[in-house]
Image (cartoon, rainbow, N blue to C red; front, side, top):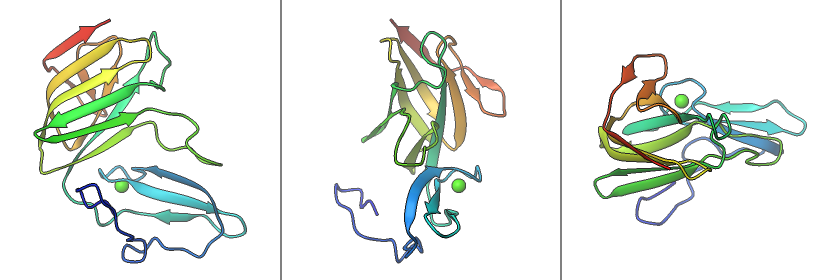
Length: 165
Ligand SMILES: [Ca+2]
């Protein structure tokens, strides 16, 4: 469990995710689309285990990339967000672990921040997009060729944007 001060403490037992299974693959994603990250573990000689996150609190933002000149899923892109003193980064990757693949949707837990002050996408080819004032608690799609953010399952959202190549 992340203490938010650079430290971590063991919390598997407290959160009910300690298992004696012979785990092989593990993937994390928001499988039930409720804004928090869930987990699936596959085991060698027993059934897979699906852990639904029931303890997450606070605001969040999920970002799906859509590459055009870059690869379709934005693998290799770096997403940075800033909200007050909180800065976070995710790298979109493929092949996260043995016998598993995490979602390519970048998930950010942002605590009490209902607005992400700045969101920057650095694409593998060097192109950069910067969005300001992005509301939290939604899944958005950022298209490499568009100056708008698309709400997944919703309407387009016009936000301040700058693009550099
Ligand atoms: Ca979830």
